[in-house]
Length: 213
Image (cartoon, rainbow, N blue to C red):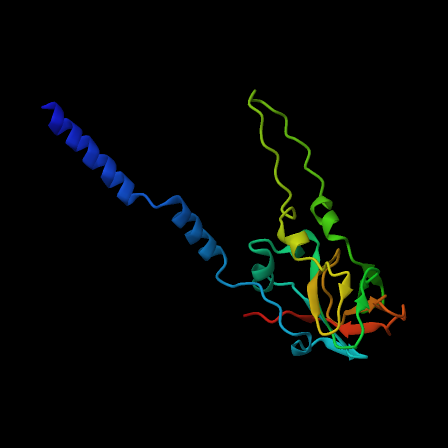
């Protein structure tokens, strides 16, 4: 086969492979679109059925329990299947004062009145220790299993506001090591007016499940 003709064949094959293969960035974008059909969003506090308003401060508390509800916030992970109940807290401040949330306390109150404190988001990935390694029969090392709770969404979507100015809102999840019980409530305390140090009255909000879209 003449050298020039052989070169043309090789060039044509290479060009065909390039055209057929998807661009890496396009492939990544396509996967991202498939995984984020439903974007996580937070509605105004007063729009949730489970909310309470005191002295110009409105707080909603919503349980995320089912696969469909948790999918928008945590993707394929449903924390409930690993003993963690996420509760979304949405707070709006129309009190006329900046609120100090440094000491904010949120508890899950069961129907029997037993209170469960929230577990800090940074501790969630360590709730289940690594499994004991299997006896190795091969000289090749095995990669340990990743804790399913070790995902960025757990701390990334946690409630993090420390100050809440007048006219603004804040939201995020609190995590409880319990299964959800019908009739449970969120008990929220230690909200202070920043200028005066005066503590607001406590909030006790009946917990409802997040609406499933």
